[in-house]
Length: 327
Image 1 (cartoon, one colour):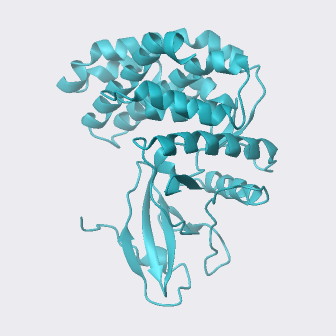
Image 2: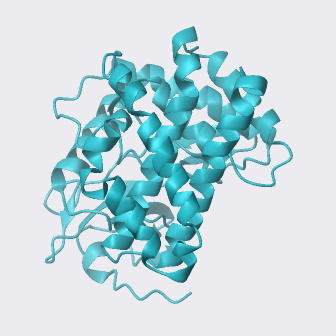
């Protein structure tokens, strides 16, 4: 694919020892990332597409700095300073970017059971480290259990109306209704989570946000959505990332992931009991987030169609299998 972005202005923010080679790197919905090579060294340029809020990036980088003081068995991003001595660059249109040292490795695979176990261990060790840090800046994102507050502009009525925006979405009207019913049933649990102890969590710790070598996880990336939440939410996010249709090994993978976490930094019985509700919060958060993106004309309808299908599949899988087979 040919890049349509002119990276010149972004790269001119930094002093490179030699001309740069730009390599396309798989980017997520929220950011554009490219590998930058110069004089035998590699870096990662990250352009923030989801917002233009420097407070979010400064908090992310403060958390990274705090974590560097902990004894981590894996690497985390380290930002470089630009020509002005800043770790955040701001384009003329307000777009934010940052440059990081490259962490060499591959993306882990859910098909590799060793990676699944290693991710559970990594999440547990990261959770322990995040519990110890004390950033001076406040969280910029609400905890998952404040779903209704976060998505007040996407209330139940508006969410259901989203099903009318195309024929493909209208065909999923029963799915929208089922997800809205799940949302309403979580209200009591969310009120309970409000009373639980909170700590910093990564908030988006999934396979694509980690780096592996052989069977080990050697890097954790993308702390943009780090926030204060109940600690079990970290594990809930990862389990949800495993729940995919037509995976005959799904039950085994979930058990292995849970074992990796519980062998390292075990959750309490109360936390484990409520874990499926936290998983549903993650699924609904994703569905509402992408409904908002469609409303704001940031995505095509087919993106939300896929999200609705996946979110409902996840909720149904939890309802049908968790209590009998996973506890």
